[in-house]
Image (cartoon, rainbow, N blue to C red; front, top):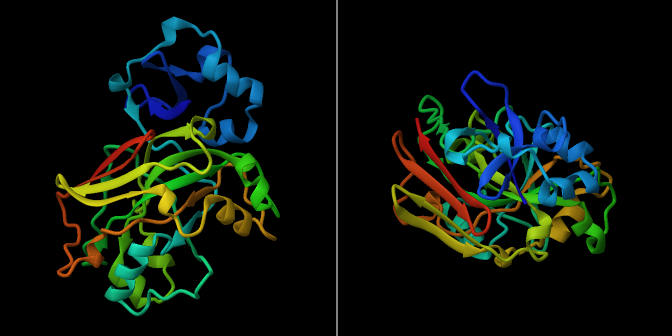
Length: 292
């Protein structure tokens, strides 16, 4: 099931809908009143989710997807986005060649968080922040959406806490990331967390999902890998993050990026205004954003 956050018009309030029969159907057509994706994730029962996926609905409410403004599936995350660094081997190697700051303790995941007040959706701009950075970079990532409050979860039970997946671009100011040692600031400038175009519920994929993941800049493919290449698995990530920490329903976990980011090039080609970045994951969709 593919779930979207959208607006019928620029001045309209955001709504949540499901893709059914080639069209977008607002959840209200199923008699549900969830006003946001966060609310749906937190409160919808299994029976209501099944109704969205398979149940009858008011056909007059169907909307052509191209006729609405699609937003990020979770435009305003309730908590910081949790992230994995250096979680694909080839990317870990290219990062270390760029800077000694990209070091990790062998066998242990690199965790950090990312401040997101608003997550741009498909078609929205990525701010260049030219007053702050000269090394703007892209990172396509599979994002995991937690479906219910999780604490002290075992690896064996981690799958039960995954609501679904989306595409995330972990935009990064490399000069800020390296200057401050801690990655938080260089990852957290406004507009640095595009996501979309939708959330695909976990039942649509095997666990863990093995999906082709790519990015391109101005039509040139930069990253091309598969999510089965993660060093630290989704089950391990969910389990470790939840030890002694409550992951609230709707928490977003970015699982890391593969080789091919700008900083990994022999002569890095960082993003500049006008560049079009396309991040795509098989079975989920394509996220396109222009640097502005």
